[in-house]
Length: 237
Ligand code: GLP
Image (cartoon, rainbow, N blue to C red; front, side, top):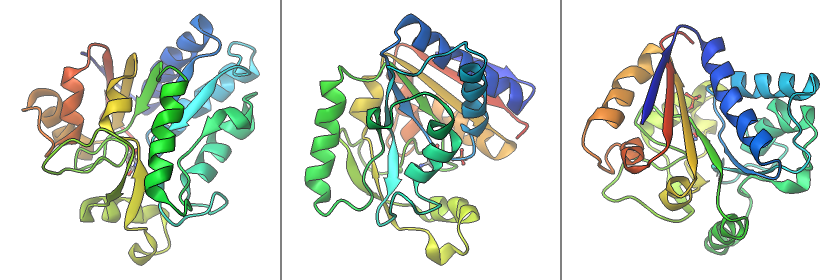
């Protein structure tokens, strides 16, 4: 595992974007696993800049997102589909048909989850997976628990996650209680993983994930088992 400490969020974002753009250059039809939240906003801004100055061509790239709130429609301003469109897809030359975000409105969630895993497998897996980390150590919405869950599944959100994410909603009451998340198998099968985190409030959980026991109580600790993980951290947000 490579751990990089940077002095600013901007630098963190540039480094993450460089890794992703490098993968696209090497393999123009690569599969990117993408994340939402505050952490990747700067990375996406950089990728948009790279597209606009002709450095990066996304025309053949495919993307799969980690997660989506159950019950939010794609045009809901807090849905992760809406986030991805506004923060990245609408500003680069990606074919939207090649972008997948779990369907928060799926009528049969179990069938949807199976189909999502089958889709990722049909692409040959993920080349580069971008991750943030929750204050409770979650990746995607794989919340702390008694076991790691392999497949895409519906997760009950932790109180700490609901609290942390309530900053995006009008009130805590409006935060969905469940979400569809990619499981650990698709994440760990990614050829390369880039985890970005910024701010003092992520420091302790990150240290625990990187240096503590590998345990489902700290879901990100599973990354210790992966052969190609780059962690980029800045205490500035
Ligand atoms: C959300 C997302 C995660 C994300 C995490 C951290 O709950 N499901 O994928 O990594 O929270 O978010 P942020 O970057 O806003 O701190």
